[in-house]
Amino acid sequence: MAAIFVSNRSLLVLRGEIDGNALPRLKDGLWRLLQRRPPCLLVDLSRVTFIGSPGLAVLIQARQEVHAYGGRLALFGLRGAVRTVFHLAELDRVFRIFPDQAAAARAVSSL
Image (cartoon, rainbow, N blue to C red):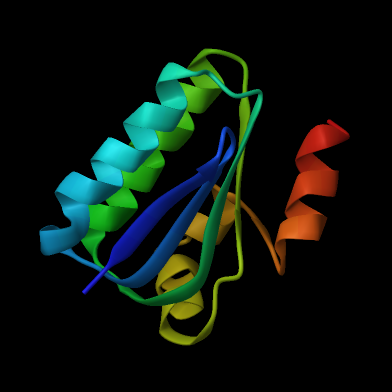
């Protein structure tokens, strides 16, 4: 089961399996953040154990939304199978991915 938390105005924390069942919560959390148009949006994937194609599609759409208003989006904490999925789908070429929150925050705030 997935858990999705809006930690603050620019941080979305995901946990567990991000599959079709988690999609409504993921979309809700992301859209609540996107309505605020944060200049930098960070997504914590450090405790995600699985992400399916619906979850990837939502993250891709969020990236497009953030870029449309001139913001920046970064992912961090990808591990194991989740990192492999991003690599195999070549999404590591699409998203800015960092090892931890501090590195992600530094990188997107310095652009």
